[in-house]
Image (tube, rainbow, N blue to C red):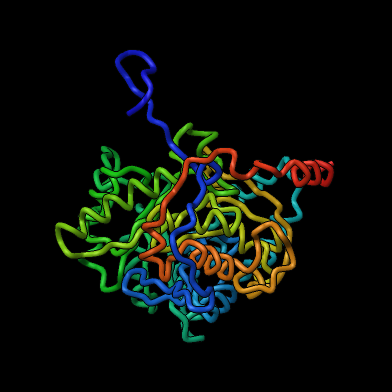
Length: 386
């Protein structure tokens, strides 16, 4: 299916979170009895949520609290915490810089070389508090930093780039062989990001332990504007989950799918699970916590690219503690607090007792679902934005 656009080509219809709604099932359940636990890369998580590897969101202190609450925070090994012994003064400079000059300033401070001793130190700061430690780097640095992270005691290593495939071609450098990398690592490897069925299946075949899904949907990411690429997250998640399911059917090996980015509210997160996600990776929701080092400021992982930035600095403010954002009680009515409570209530209303059952609920194409009958709410939002 698709629409002919000329030159013998078709363009398919794709859907994002605002285009769909979840269809209530034949039974309802007690929200208190819903199981939201999941397993990612062999690690049992009490809540199916990862905190994104962004410097404004995750530092060792945040990772510790997030792990204590049952989730998994990812520390960026190519961020400020491995470049500066005292990264917090640098963060103060980032958040106080004028908006029109922020990207150029961020580019400059990220030129500071990464220090291998700081990689080990930051991982140790996480592990001393008895939490699971996940870290990330780009593919070009994975061999070097993967070995260091593994030696330092990291539990999961994530190889992450704007677009990742199992077949990367270059004449000027040797691409990362994901298959060999996974085989050589003693800890699980998660890879991302991708958005299509074929690429997802090929990546899963390399021996990874998890797959990140999403190109450009993040609140601080501008890849879609700069590069013109991406697929809305509903379609991307469904397609990649289909690849996971076929691989499981053929091999008996289940590789979890993690929807990464584009989720503004708890309703979006619920839709990601209904599309087939085993977990979600979120940044913007948690940068609003009092524990986040960015103090309400959020900047994309590719903002610091020297030649072609694909991120921006945004201010989302601080709305509450991390515990309130995850478990409530919610002080806001916009779906940005008590995320886990909302997930449980949604699942209970849909008759889904666990994440696996949630992946099978009915989905309706409903682009007007958020505006139907909401004229007064829309008017209120418009007034508050003036």
